[in-house]
Image (spheres, chains in turn green, orange):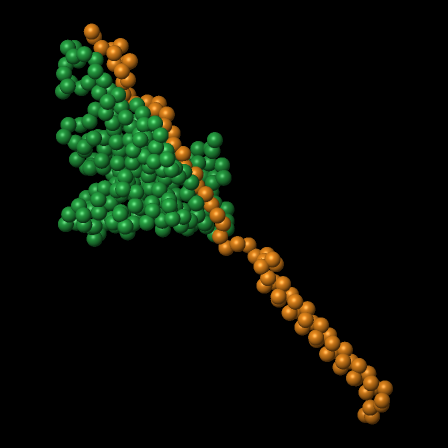
Length: 243
Length: 79
C-alpha cells in the first residue's frame, strides 16, 4: 500500500489558555497557503507515487495571538461555509486549488488522502482456484467534504449550510507549540477499512456520501456522524513531540 | 509692614529661582515625553505574538486486517 496524496484544509485555529479561554489565531495572510481563517496543509511533494500532486509543501500554520501563555490547541479540518462554495477559478490561493475542489454545490474536499493498493483479484474477476495470480492495482481515495448541500445544480452555490457539513473538530487540550506537532495518522484513518475492495455500485474509496458503506469506518475515525454509527472523538489527529 | 531693599531683593531672587525651576521642569518633562514617544524608547510589550503550528504525517500502517499484500495472498492461496 502506497500513499499517493495527503492534503487537508484547517480553519478557525485557536489556542487555549490554562483557564480554558479560547483565543482565535489571526492567520498570516501569505497569499499562497492561508486565506482569511483557512489554511491548506499540503504534506505531499509530488514525488514518487504522489504524481498528481505538486512539489510545494506546507506544513506550518502561522499567525498571531495576544501575548499570553497557551496550553492547548483547537482547529477545524475543513473550509468554513462562507468560503466553501465560491468560484475556485476566481478564488484567492489556496482556495484556487482545483485538486481540492468538488463543485460549487458541494464545495471543497476538506481532506484528500489517497493510497494505492495492490490486491488479490476479487471473486468478480474470476475464481481464485482457477485463475492465475494477477495483482489488481487499485486505490482507496478518501475525500471528505460537505454533502447534502441544497442548490439548483452542481454549479450553483447553496444558500444555506449543508445537511452534513462534515467539518471535523480537533481539540488538543495539552499542546506545546514549541515542542509538539500535529500528526495526521493514515493508519488511524484507514484502520477500520478494507482498502482492497470497494463496495459494489459505490464510488471508489470514500467520497463522503452517506450511501457508501466504505465511508462508515472512515467517518467514525474522524469523529463525524454517519448513518447509525456511534459518534466518537476523532482519532486521526493528535499531538506528538517534534522530531 | 515696610519692605526694605533687602527683602525686596530676596523676593526678586526667589521669583527668578521659581521661574528657572519651572523652565527646567518643563524642559525635563518635554524631553521625557519625546523620549517615551520615540520608537527606540518603546518599552511597552507588543500587542500580539507570532505563533506557528506545525503538522506532520504518520504513514506507518500498523494494522489493516483486511489488507493482504501479494506475498501473503500467494502463500495463502491453494494452488
